[in-house]
Image 1 (tube, rainbow, N blue to C red):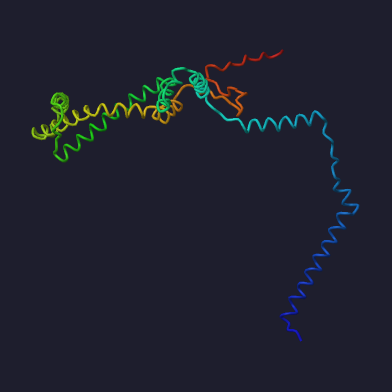
Image 2 (image 1 turned 90 degrees about the vertical axis):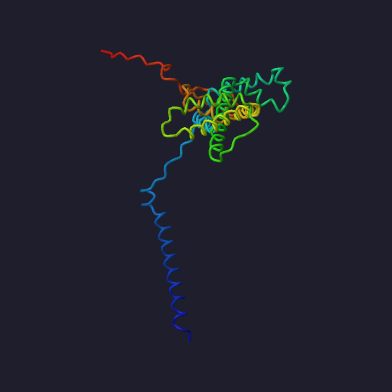
Length: 253
């Protein structure tokens, strides 16, 4: 004799299969009945004409073109045109390969290159000067082999700036002035090293700092939609004063 624990699951399984099969037969009968066919009539499929097929194909192609388009600024297109002219320049062709990036930046964007060089030159002067002044003050050390003319000039400049400080006594002012004068002289001595470094870093500073800053705060907000093949160009945004106002419509009486 089999136990009840083995027989009951098998009976439940048979009952569930019978119920599922019976429900499937009912669904087939309902779907094939006349009342169902009258209530749920299938809509006839209309064949598309040749014009509709052409329009649908045109929409698909236009969507593909729009998906491949990318938005670039007007300055990017102008830079590409300038670069194509630069590649044909005889002086650029004769330039050595290691100087071509700087020649390209200098000829394509002379204002950006010059501004980058000036900013880097000032930064390379101020930061070493303040750093050396702090070190000379903290460790009470002065360089020995520094031109006396530069030290005297720095002493005159710094003594004029700190003479009105009332919080320092005379000894502290003298120490600060001597440290600042030596820092000024040493910064001037490093000028032949600072200029080549500024010249080397000027194109990269123009690319990653000046140009993004100019795009962010520039007035020119024109954008051009350009496809990957470069054949379709279209201005999608204009300045406010360039947009033409629509004439007021006259009401017909």
